[in-house]
Length: 481
Image (cartoon, rainbow, N blue to C red; front, side, top):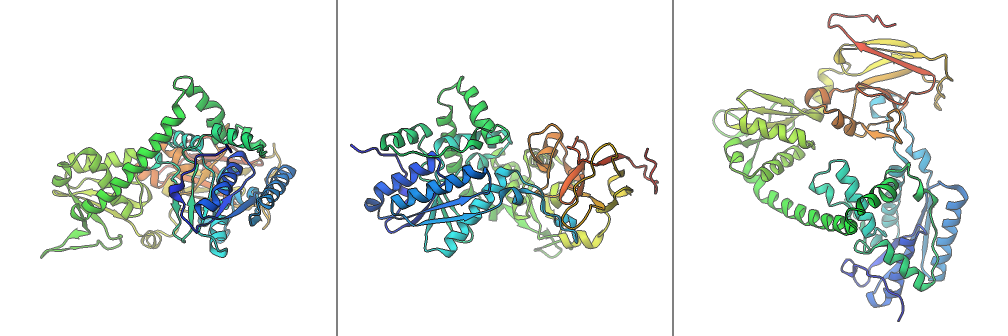
């Protein structure tokens, strides 16, 4: 009897033109071989697709050659492309508008973004219906654990979905989510099929690898079936999230009221705000806490916000026990106001914010130089450090200024003694910064890199020294050492 591998065939249909994302590793090689075994029976038209990430030099070149040869042996059309992941991970300064600069990414994040962008491009330009990736039960367990460590909600714990439909029309399938890495290697050995080993998978500088090689084995000493249980948790979270979405689609129109009440009846949006939403606090109080949280987060999502657990609980407290006139200012322009009967949520329009105070929360700091940032109650100075080499100049010339501004979604910062960039959002969560303070938390940026952030020790940029001190309300000049 020939070797076989369990595949979720419910994701497949006769006539499906399917490209397998082929890295050369055991998982993707096994998926391609298993699908090739069953292609005629399932009615599949198979292709193979390999993206060279521009990392690992000759090793990656050998991966590409291996994949090209395997596709030829199986008589499968082969698609390939190259990207420069390291360059893409670097910050991209926007000198005309520094606030729109692209922040730095980790190599992991940049590689994933580039990979899925290429899949989407392939789907749009090639006669293909879907791309299959070889995510396994082990990958699922690692992802659930990573999401849990970051404090994800239920939807986050659903982790890797078997089917992912892109707004642009592409479909990503994961037929091996119930298959373990051990089953995959057993299948390949039985076939006598070799595979490639990515040396970077052993590098524990990457978060995923630390979870795989250090944390999961440690936890499995307590429960040997942990991976299976984590994958089951993802399935439960996925199904429960689908139920919640259908329930919210039914209940939200009944419980969420648009805008504010106006004399004579009806409701209208407030000037300068996106169309707000309100919830009758008496009706909200009659619901279970789980539904209360879901409705509040659903309402916030309609206004472009995603409150974390502390922010959601703050909204619940304001709704259930707050007094008329009390307000909360949350991250990213989300505001909440308690009236006698309602909790009203609104989000400031970006244009309104910019026209009201176009230069209040962004300051240009010359290098060397100083600024009195009254919006942040901060006196800040940037000096050249004679004790170290000056910073490398960008392509447009030597850096001559830095930008002091509020943080924005997508910002990343390198903390001293940290293994890689961290999301500013997550750093603020660890600092327990909420409300108005969170919205205007200051960072100092140069050429897309954050070199100072209030409240934390940032990995220094060689050649520069930043000094910050509280600014007295009446101050108009600096007095820094």
